[in-house]
Length: 287
Image (cartoon, rainbow, N blue to C red; front, side):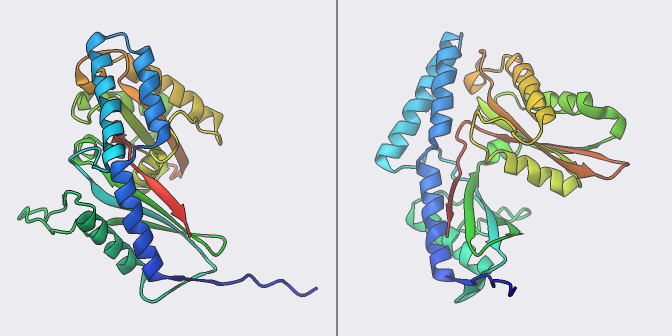
């Protein structure tokens, strides 16, 4: 029997640019329903009067930003983009990376978003929030999935990675994560969402940790019950730290802990922690 050939889909760079632009403006002005609901649940659970006031202001701020189409936070982030390219998709009218960069450039100009990218040594601003951080995965199919993730500097600064010895095991991983969140304190604007990446290599653990932040708040790891249990334990340990909303003390220091994992070298145990502030911004669309 003759094999059925897959249909190649042509995707124009202009559509990619327009999509990236729209996603970054939306991500910076409309907080996800899952995050808003998590903040409301935190408000109901918080025992500290000050903590409750902080959470009320966070919810009010998100509502105003959405209503007035204004940035939720003055730090409108480094532009992180996750792209899934179907192997049967054909990009036409230019190249993919340039199309993404142009979308970021337009979003930050036309959306009146703060440009936060600079030369590491001179600190001179690039003035258009590029270059973006782009992660590309090749997948089945003929579609293109774009995830726009503006990442603030305050939370990113508190993130970390370490190559643990294999003997450290799961207890060593949990100890590392809790220590990093405790050290971060108020700096990443809690209550935070913590992404944990385990395994792979040094750089892959960091990417896994950042991808973990894309999971809906409150959704446990469905692929590995060991990781779901670790998320539960870390969530309790971190909320027992007493950092609280805004770092002013209280019960709710974290809204979620999301752990992702992949196999690693027999001599290694890479682990990365990527901390996200309460303004957990990301929007996605599939072309």
